[in-house]
Amino acid sequence: MKKKQTLILLLICFSSIFISLFVGSYRASPGEVVDLLWTKLTFGDLSRFSVLLQTAILDVRLPRIAVVFLVGMTLSASGVVFQATFQNPLVSDHVLGVSNGAAFGAALALLLGLEMIVVQAFAFIFGIIAVLITWGISKSYNRSSNLTLVLSGIITGGFFSALVSFIKSVADPLDKMPAIVFWLMGSFARVSKSDLLFSIIFMGIPLFFIFLVRWRINVLAMGEEDAKALGMDTGRFRFVLIILCTTATACAVSLSGVVGWVGLVIPHVARILIGPDHKVLIPTSLALGGSYLLLMDDLAKSIITSEISIGILTSLIGAPFFAYLLRKGTGWK
Amino acid sequence: MLAVHNATFSYGNKMVFSDINFKAKEGDFYCVLGPNGCGKTTLLKCLAGILSLNKGIIYLEGVALNSLDRNAVARLVGYVMQEQDTVFPFSVRQMVAVGRAPYIGTFASPSEKDMIIVDEMIEKIGIGELSDKKYTELSGGERQLVLIARVLVQQPKILLMDEPASHLDFKNQEKVMRLVKKLTQSGITVIMTTHFPNHAFAYADKVALIYNGEILADGDTKSVMTEKNLSIAYEMPITIYSVQGENNREYNFCVSS
Image 1 (tube, helix red, strand yellow):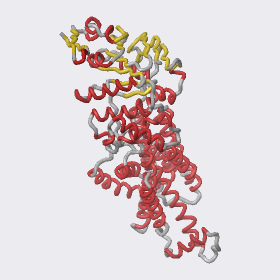
Image 2 (cartoon, rainbow over the protein chains, first blue to last red):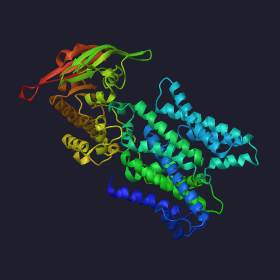
Image 3 (cartoon, rainbow over the protein chains, first blue to last red):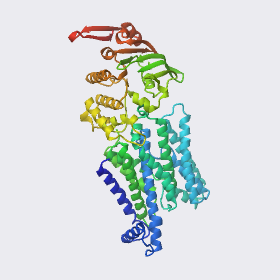
Image 4 (cartoon, helix red, strand yellow):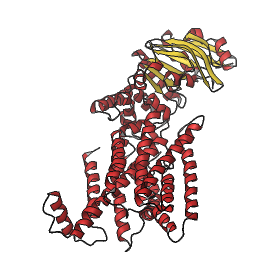
């Protein structure tokens, strides 16, 4: 990657993070925020700042920025990886049924009136269970291929989405149903400082490994047989990639609900901007995905007085933007 | 260099080929001929380690193929498939660089040294001006040259080519065939399937004629490429003509009569 490109990407990341520091329901002047952060960074005395300001910035805004950025990176990187793995521009992070599984897990926990942390755990676990079922179905066919895996994902996804509808239909329409619907639309409002460690382990670490093996994805993108002839153990590599992406996506969905279109739009934008070489495409997608979702979250926080669901925003903005992009070329053959 | 013993392959109950035996030595230009569906491509895929034989053994330099890991096989054997149809518009340079994969660690990407090998090969094959073009936008002939450059940076001792000339015009066919011939002269063993018996006449040292999943005849080009053998293999009467060209060189070609 050229120096100039790296610099631009870093600039995009830092400015989106910087902007996000000042967006939120607690009204703090930019000067105050910068002063507080500087004091914190230099281990200065924090006592001259109000407790409210400290909580708003250090305990709410900063962790939320970190989690949103990680989720954005996860969704876009998984999109890139799945598109390369399946050689299909239409697949994204949801292709193997992880979102539908996670949605079911969350809806079930909400129906049973369980704690928010259990809702997250259910979403995470069912997201992974869904992908395992997808994998199992595709293995049960005589000739398992990329196509059978994608088809199995559609089957699993359809099944879990029907279960979600069932739960909605039996949930208490005054109390639980709105909670389920709101959860499914996607939001970062419920993210807190305690989610940070969970995010770093289940999104940060998989993303780090995806980053490390990024050039190899070029080999896999040559297609199954060609990649084998080039010395790759395609079955194992694909399996590892799917595990990494599934873990990270399940974690993302369990924290934010279903945030659509990021895994489809960002990889295409990145591919148009920088080309298909995954050595540079992965870092570009990570930077753009994180920044994009962060700015969307800022919008979600500030457009109306009560917070609008980010899933609605990414779809409302993502879909037309995607349509516009396709006019400029697809980044595909 | 390469020895195949009693190679048998079937998809489920459907036998593709059985009891295939042959040997190729260093620098051999070996053509595999036979009608559509006779198992040529499947045989090449087995030799490349992409598919596994049901029975029999393939030896690469005296070592059984199935005892080697994939990377080790890929350093010995290069495979140019009939149609590389990647959906991503990789540049020619990126495409050729992928050929270095067997020498690059899981967490690494091509080093400067790898890229020097890549650039040198691109120049050597004569596609320097295409280096930054998109592979997916090239013509069939250009693509074939890119794939040959890619397989050569893999530095294999055995080169498997699946009908490299099938989508090319007359000029590009000759260009590719001459290039392959030159490779054999530098010591690379080439096993090539083809639909054109005349390519075997013009370039091959040895020919294996496959019919119904079995070897009908193999050995020196002249002894295999007889009117009788070809007529059986292609299930139609075939006549071979021989003409004297410049420098008293003999040209053989066959037509269906």
